[in-house]
Length: 365
Ligand SMILES: [Zn+2]
Image 1: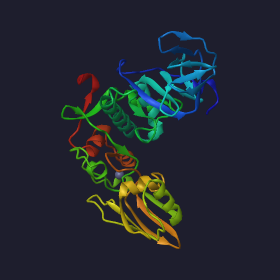
Image 2: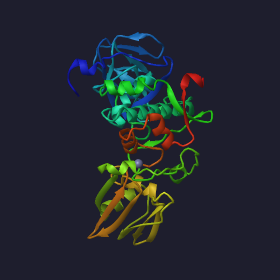
Image 3: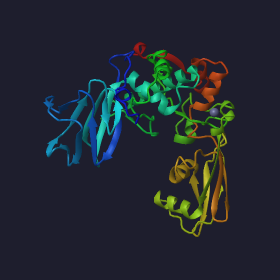
Image 4: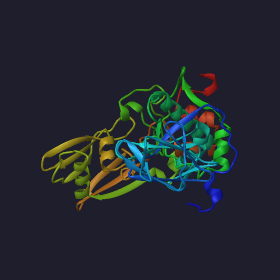
């Protein structure tokens, strides 16, 4: 938290290119309570009437309701004169607080273009070359629109974590992030007439992955391309050591019936060089786990990709890998290097998503 009111207020002009296009992002789930604050904040209940609540407002989870000072509400919508602070973080647009399955659910509804400005520095750095920032703006917009179309009947469109796109509100907006968004205002990637599923990742480690290897679904613009561009980045290479006993616990916690694990071995590789499966040798014999499931069970931030070698030495599994992320679609570090090499954002995008083109959202509605 930067501390000053100026930083909390998300100052700056709003340049929403498509005023009607909004997005709904789940910014907090399953929380026992949440605190909402902000300058000039107002609260509206589900029937549209205003509620007099003095900020900061502490909202607790109740069965089928949210509770403030002993009064139960089905939903409270908060808006401020500049930004709404949710647990101290400022967000543009409104914050809707309602009861979720296991706790308070907070959904931030805001103009799509404002969402993108806040997102840039969560996903990359706006200090990267502008063509890479613009490429990030286009794929984040494309990803969001595709999700909005797919989840049009859902209560919200996007998660705010790596499950969808990392988004932490407007606190880390800056002028370069805004420029990347406004210079590409309303632009999305299409394949034929459809907005594409613009998957992307941090670092492919040399070759991007085909979508069917990760999700079992072939998409003609996600078949994988060579990408040596990211290999100049230190983030291409990772090493990790984990005690075999710890690894066994994580596999058990993920539902795998293993006990007395003695060895972990790389299995076969797919055509893009990533592991199709990982062999786990235990007192029950040898088990084969799909590479991406192994990665999920141990932790995405621990096993950064499925392109790795592994050996067990003195009770420790020693991993050495390439890349960071699932590898499908645009490689962010590769895009950065391509921008440094002088390519435009349109060229960068058509490289990572072959056969696609740019179109304005306003031209497809
Ligand atoms: Zn790459």
